[in-house]
Image: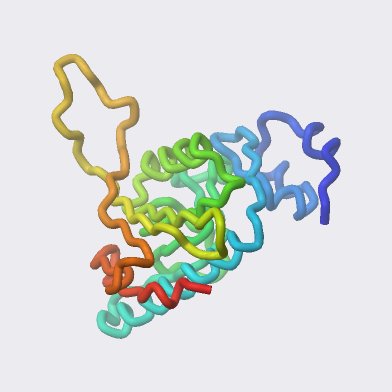
Length: 216
């Protein structure tokens, strides 16, 4: 359903979770709260939904295999699920395109502390500045792994998959220089369709995804 522009512009700059719940779903589903500030989430093209689903299914297959090999582990894989950044409260959350988190009870909120991996599918509707800001918030919340899937611009396909690991200590900087943020992600893997072995990485559990599983 299309949302009239007047409904979007009439909302306040800041809201609480309780106020957000009072909005129609077609509006509330397009909002993230960044420490109470309203941030609009742009809808992606159909390719965005298509490859989000493929990534989620591929990761779920790998998670299930990991759980069969290590019965003590319990992972859940979902998409477009709110991740609340604080230990309490719900006025600060992000909604990754796909995510992996520790198994929770029914209808339990997903907290950053429970989350192993978050991922975003980068379509033309998402600007680089938007994604850098979002990535910084994931890192600040201590989420160990962040994935970016970049879509091809001229065909319905994935161009690149990158896996980022959370940096737990800062590198050597020039004297007097301090990092802008307390945490950051570093690229730990990068794959394209030319990689014959597909996507392979051992963290946060063994992941082995042939490129054909992501193709359309």
